[in-house]
Length: 107
Figure 1 (cartoon, rainbow, N blue to C red):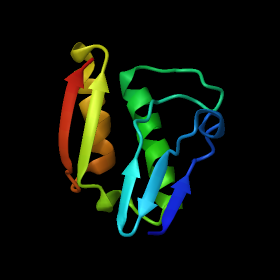
Figure 2: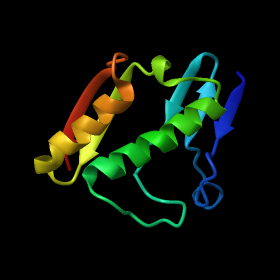
Figure 3: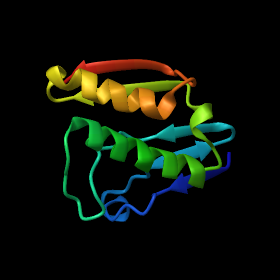
Figure 4: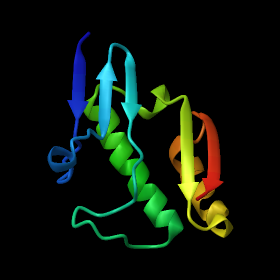
């Protein structure tokens, strides 16, 4: 079965042995993604971090031949559930009418 590995320019992927996304047939599997900059730093509030994480995911989808409209499920992990509204607002801005099945939990 053909597999396409997508690193999305991650500096850690080769060392750790993972891919940002893997395409197998018509399915694309995306790894958990944090809203960090290319320097590895976390910046901005929960809304900005969520937008950054979703931008990284969108880049991986594009590289694997998919688009946001292909996303059917998202899982959101937050360290402070009080930030749910800022995180949810960012998710809504990105996915608008796509509205994938989604779960948000505090970890």
